[in-house]
Image (cartoon, rainbow, N blue to C red; front, top):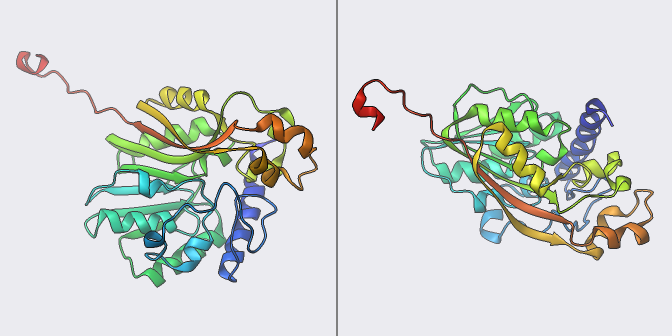
Length: 283
């Protein structure tokens, strides 16, 4: 499975999701999602108050597995970057929390999602928002320019997660926070699941094992690494996202029971160490 195939498939499926949301349908994380479906990963993530703060299309286009805006600490005046911002729901919610003196960026590589996000921005009337086209492995922002990075069920889609985490570390300011929702696994996943390109888009095949996630964050330079489980998926959930993938669901579903979960992943870019300029500053 090469990175070009993965990106092409992700663009296609997420472009289709944006068009469904634009035409009044709902979106699901699974590759075979259709209008009105209920996905065990993406459903019931935003409360009524949050849903009322954004255009309906932003909520319908949500393909997340958590709610980073509810779990991340955001302060007035901060700059936030959402990796894989989709229809813009988390960007718009973040922009409200950082206030007019702050800024919220959304980064996405899918034209249809970017168009939908811009329309949702217009409808919301929120002005401290900017959507950027690009890939999360190559973030088009300067070094040390962002206070907080959020993401919602997107990093698992990348075929080069080390590059994503290095880029996140680069653009964060010293002391900046990494606070993302993602799908992770506990223990090894079966090869039949890992090799499925469609399941990669369904947020499962590309998900990191939880300890691998910690290792990769540390290798990128992060500290204070923590993974908090927010949902654990059972056999019935597994049947939902394995159905229609030319996989023997009856054989595989029991083997993935409890091994797939949504998690809130936190980490911090360490503060720059002060240069020693005199004997007193070394104390």
